[in-house]
Length: 83
Image (cartoon, rainbow, N blue to C red):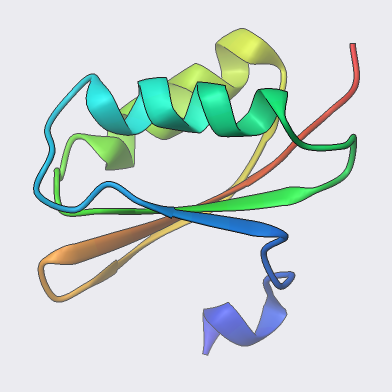
């Protein structure tokens, strides 16, 4: 299973039931509180996160590790990179 190869998250936020841009806005807030190299897990029910998270990571230079679908829920893993 792919989740076995992903690092354990240092912080998890649950944005279930909220739609764009809420998951990305909350991810941005969370990442600001984290140290370089830390991993954030964003749980979302908005399918837009599958496209939005990789694009946000590219724009902010954080590392998008994976976005996985589990039924109606998405789990998006992001590693914070330094400036």
